[in-house]
Length: 446
Ligand code: PHE
Image (tube, rainbow, N blue to C red; front, top):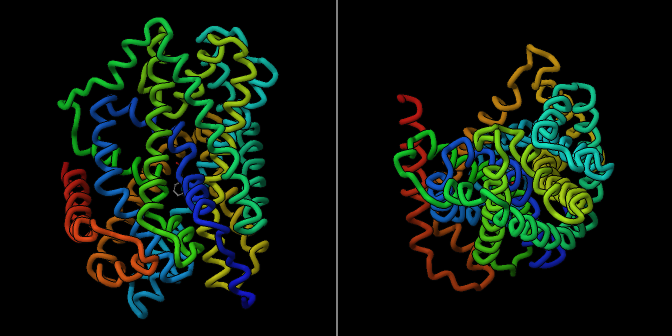
C-alpha cells in the first residue's frame, strides 16, 4: 500500500462498515432533531411523510453514495473529479465539504449540551426537580455563552482525537460496542414513557395523522430530516463508501443502515411525545430544547432514574461522536486526498475551523444578542436545504451523467443479486429529482 492509501485506510469487515455507517447515521439527528422537527410540524402526518421520504428517496440515494464512493475511492470532491473529469460536477463535492463544516459547527454545540447533561444527571442536579425548574435549568445553561462554548470545544477535541486515530482504530471500534446499548436503553425509556399518566394524548399526537397539516414546507422539513438523519446529501456516505471493500454487498448495506436509523428515530419519538404530554405546560413545538426539558422528567419517574439518566446522556454523546467523526471525516478525507496533508494535520486544522465556525451558534441563545437564533438558521440552511440540494445534484449525477449502467456495474462487482435495479434507476433518474424540484419550487414561489 502506498503512503497515500495508508493514510486513507479501509474498513475491517462488512459488519464493521455497516456498524460504522449506522454510527454516522444514528446520532443527534434521531434523538434530538427528529422529535424536535416532528413536534414543530404537527406530529403523525409528518412521521408518515418522513418514512416515505426515507424509503423512496433516502435509500436510493444512500446506495448511490456508497457506489460513487467505492468506485472512486476518494473524498467527495475527488470522486466527482474522477468519475466526470474536467466538469463542474466537482463543485458538488465542494458543496459537501462546506456543508460538512457548517453542520458540524452547530452539531458540536448541541452535542456539548449533552455533555453538560451528563454532569447534571451524574451529580443528581435534576433529581426530583419539578418540570418548571428542569426547564429553567436548561434555559439558564444555554444562555451562558462561556459554558456552552467550553462544552462545544470539549466535544470538538474528542472528535478530532478519534478522527486522528484512523479508520479502524477509532471509528469502527467505538461503533461496534455502543450502538446496541443505546437501543436497549431507548427501549426502556419508551416503556416508561408510554405508561405515564396522560401518555395517551402524546401517542395520539404521534400516531394519529391529520393530513390537513401537510404543506410543502412540511414535506421539505421531512425530506431534509431524512437526509440529515441518514447522513446523505453532503458526501459523508461517499467518504465512508470509499473505504468499503470490493466484495461487500452495497444494496443490503444501504437497506440495513436505513432501517436501523429509522428504528432509532421512531423509538425516540415514542420516548418523547407520551412523556411530553404527561407534563403540564410543555408543548411539542418547543424547538431545539425539546428533549432536554422532557427527558429529565422521565428519569424522575423511574427507579434508579439518576443512573439511567446519566447512562442515557453518555450514550447520546457517544452516538453524537460517531456522527461527528463522519462529518469531520468528509473534510479530512478532502484534505488528505486533495491537499496531500497528513491525517493528523488535516484533523487538527479542520477541527479548529469547525470550532470557530460554531462559536456564533454557541452564543446564539441570548449570550450575544447579535447572534440570536443563528443556530436555527444554520441548521435550516445547511442541515436541511443544502442537503436536499446536494441530494438532487447527486441523483442527477448518477442518473444522467455517470449513468445507471456504470453504477450497476460497480454494485454488481460484489456479485450480489440486485433485482430491483430497474426501480432504483427509475427512482434516481425521475422520481427523486422531480420530487425535490417540485418541493423546492413550491417553497420558493409560496
Ligand atoms: N446523521 C447524523 C445524525 O443523525 C448527522 C449527520 C448529518 C452526519 C450529515 C453526517 C452527515 O446525527
